[in-house]
Image (cartoon, rainbow, N blue to C red; front, side, top):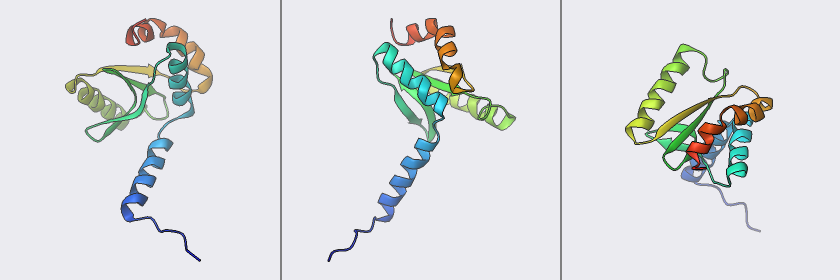
Length: 123
């Protein structure tokens, strides 16, 4: 009888990294990006990485960051946000920060930012 094949260290690292990246996505962020994909019939690349920093979503040369108070409220987080903005701009991306705290705010967020989203997705 054959036993279960053990994963190599490299495979374990990759599977743990995927889980960590998946866990970085909040429910409201996922709902917003899913809604944008449905409304505009596009595909947004999730957890896009530039220079070891992860961004919530990328479409063409646009980066979308969903800023909730839980992750973007203290000085350390704000410094990190400024640093990420600089990285995106240095790499030719246009940065868009969307304020979003709860999943129930997504419809309002979509409505308030309609002109921005129309511009990003060329509508």
